[in-house]
Amino acid sequence: MAHCMNHLDNATSNFISSSSLLTPSKSYSSKPNSLSLFFISKKSPCMTNSSYLNLQSRLSIARSPRLCKRVISVRSEKANNDSTNRGGGGGGGGFHNSQIGKRTDIKKILILGAGPIVIGQACEFDYSGTQACKALKEEGYEVVLINSNPATIMTDPDLADRTYIAPMTPELVEQVLEKERPDALLPTMGGQTALNLAVALAERRSLEKYGVELIGAKLEAIKKAEDRELFKQAMKNIGIKTPPSGIGNTLDECIEIASSIGKFPLIIRPAFTLGGTGGGIAYNREEFESICKSGLAASLTSQVLVEKSLLGWKEYELEVMRDLADNVVIICSIENIDPMGVHTGDSITVAPAQTLTDKEYQRLRDYSIAIIREIGVECGGSNVQFAINPEDGEVMVIEMNPRVSRSSALASKATGFPIAKMAAKLSVGYSLDHIPNDITKKTPASFEPSIDYVIPRFAFEKFPGSQPILTTQMKSVGESMALGRTFQESFQKAVRSLECGYSGWGCAQVKELDWDWDQLKYSLRVPNPDRVHAIYAAMKRGMKVDDIHELSFIDKWFLTQLKELVDVEQYLMAQSLSHLTKDDFYEVKRP
Image (cartoon, rainbow, N blue to C red; front, side, top):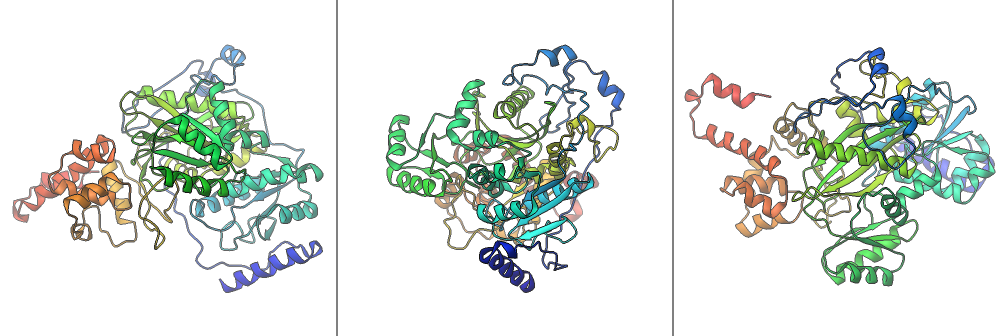
């Protein structure tokens, strides 16, 4: 690692001292402590290409809350011809049997990495960048990579044709553009860092100067998705609700917006930031002014969205992909166990979504298709986040990431659908119906994955000294992932994988936590890293599911699943080993 860091220092000083010293790095051969990702997938039902091409109407398979089983929607040729309203998005994705192939007018592609590992931007983007490098080289393109972090897989010497280790700044990337003269720039694999860098390069006309084309996401689409005001107007254009809000560029403007909304709590969301940096939930005037100042300082454009609170609403994410032929597929639905108010990176998440009705899922699906078209993401992956009122089913869109996101890595492992790899191939002209599915080897990538297991994601470490309260600003620095046939199975596996010494939910360490009733209720009411353990303690003391729901706003379906685990434990504790039957053991160990 010392060798890598010395190499980084040398590369940085070379960049700063003189552009003539700019040289790609290929000199090191190994990186200690690199992360090894595991991959587990389940084959989807096979469907032949002929049956796919013969489908002329929307097909769907009945979907239960636990199983996400479905076939993509395919519009008839007439429907394709009539689908001129880009904002409609209703029904299917509009699949065209196009003859689009890879582009031959570009030969060399520059990929922007994610830079240093920080909260909200960790190894997920190393995974994405690595997949993109492999996919583009597989297609015969010359790949150049720039990243400031040498301790990544993507900077391995054999991945890109040339690798530059240097600070991720517009000035230094422009030097790479001048030296390499790539035909295209792919910014959607490096998280928010790469996206912001691409915007900066475009606005200083560096891309125009060297004749470099943005692929994966155009500048207009990036701005439309990331700029809070433009995004709000875009949603208004297609009739999709957003929370009542206003855009502020100064503290005085933010205070005026807060007065017009009427009451606290209020949510502050800065534009062009990662992991909710600078944002948060304000419960009074003092907190509001403090968070607004932080948000304005953190935003690339000094812009924040002041939004009416949707605390207690259920939060969902959909991973969406689109190609240049306007084919759109929903790769995965993800549900946050914690309600709105907790950053999705800090919440336990489950894929596929467990508590959506089929009608609600179809609505989110149609909205996602309409949104990706309206924003103008022509090809590649996007992440769309929704809030649903559990009382009346009202849906509002929260935001959209016009890039491969942190959740994309989760969705890729949940479905076996390599989102980053597919997004890279889509960016160079391929259509979804001409990319073979990596799992089946027979069906095209235009078939939505079918999965029947769930994957919780759990934060297991916080920075020392930080306030142990979870808000819209991400604070977790790690997570575990588990596969299972049921929520209970995968939940227990994930808890055991936290590297905190837990043998499972409700283990000895949790039982030793000494909460009085006031502390217990506070831990249920206020989102914090120990809330899931507070649920166990409350259930052990006899608190009902309805009472826990009123305090935490966690969906009763999840609480009921957890209550079953407590009930089974109490039953076993009341029995002697000699009295347990074969059926008892089967019931306890059933998947």
